[in-house]
Image 1 (tube, rainbow, N blue to C red):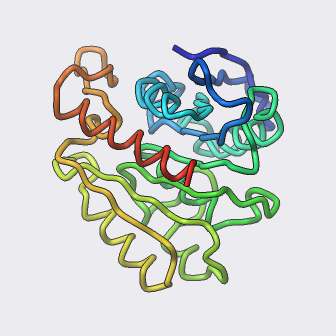
Image 2 (image 1 turned 180 degrees about the vertical axis):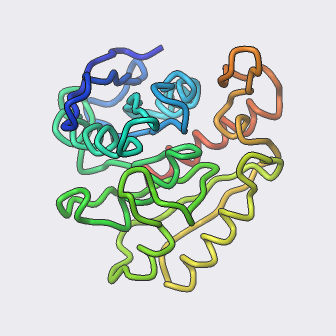
Length: 241
């Protein structure tokens, strides 16, 4: 369970969105920070809650905001505002904003990767690392409005390590998309890695899709639990390394 749920204010005139904070008992006084963005469905931060809690158990403070993909700008104002909120308020939750990893799942993956490729998005304050989970990188990122593959081709520096995670049984976003992006990163001599697991689009974040509810719920199957825990471990490694 999150230790706190707080509102953060956007700049597009829409109502404040909510953000959950996860932090384990007995954590160090100051931990690295992880900002974790959910996928396409609007205001579904609960879908990545299990992954956030598991990631936090490694001694991290994890911030999980709602954002609306159906907003006129595709959610860009919400995503940028949540990033700004974490930068400005992480210390109040015992997290170091200078040791920030930005991660995202599905549509959130491209958004997270965009923060490494577009320094203007963060006023030059690049994250420590970015993690894309089951993402597409040839479409405009929700955080930037530009295509990660195109931004990569124009990038002049490669300061931020990129970590890609994907399920080999993913039929919603096939795993070759992450492999193709890894190849593009390697051609640019960008520090990057890809981790694959035998699970699907939902299982990679320790969930299962419930067709009756129309959203993902915490997983009970062994494969998804195993894959989600490995995703959390990789996230923690990016933050603690």
